[in-house]
Image 1 (cartoon, helix red, strand yellow):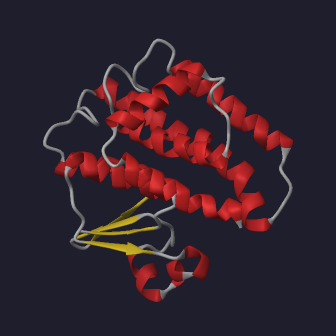
Image 2: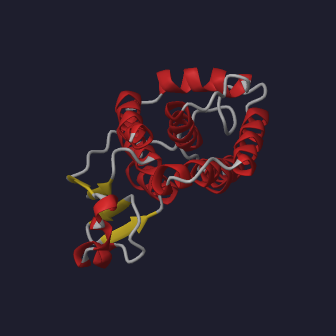
Length: 210
């Protein structure tokens, strides 16, 4: 099973932490330098014609979109279903959180920071407001909760940890969202692979420094 990724990428880091939580080791981890266009090479396009990262290649089966990969790893390699329960309602809540992470929280990061990082554009106040709205939602989800999707630690916590740590390294101050701040400190302690995740965050931080 091969994993194509970039260490600084938040979606890639989510998959790496999931794999570590499951005790899954990849046969090969291939770093794709997207800035150099390696995702557009013919051999990579054969695996993933959408040319995105991360991508998993498991004995001829190719899958991309980090949250789909996370679910796949649990369903195929998990010794139990704690991270992604078989109970329909518990699973649905985790799915909602994963989709919120992809379509709202992480998207707000990309919409605000990526134009500044990659295109040297000025900060957009309207995009910043969307970050605040996203964190207000997450803060509400975590009201009275130890974990982000119900009573147990799950894939939702891993996905959110990757995203929130990216905001952290970017310098976004989310301490005013007290539920998020408390959850974040706890999730860092609970999640296998946190140290490697933070190292990836620091790798991503170089884009800001440059």
